[in-house]
Length: 105
Image 1 (cartoon, rainbow, N blue to C red):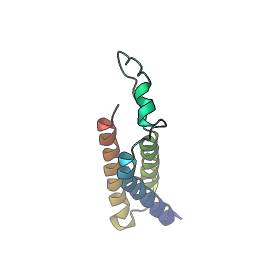
Image 2: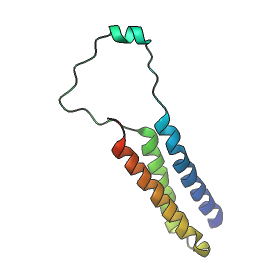
Image 3: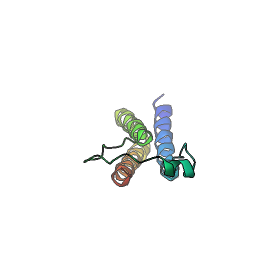
Image 4: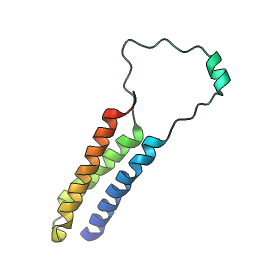
C-alpha cells in the first residue's frame, strides 16, 4: 500500500512540474476582435493593482504540498527513493514559487 502511495505521489509531483511550461505559455484569448477592442474605452487603472490569482499554479502547489506530506509520513525509506522524491517535490514547489514571482500582474 505505501509503495503504491509513494509511486502515486512521485507521479503527481512529476506531472505537476511537467505541466508548468504549458500553463505559462498559454495566452488568454480575447473575446472581442481587435477592431472592437480598440473601440472600447479602457478603464482607468487603479492606484494599486489587485494581485491576480493563478489558480492552476496554486492548485499544483497544493497538490505538491499534499504529496510531500504523504511522502514524509511514509514509514519506510524505499532504499532512498522516498527522500529523493521529497527533494524533487521541493524543487517543483520552488519552481512554482519562482513562477508566481515573475507572473504578470
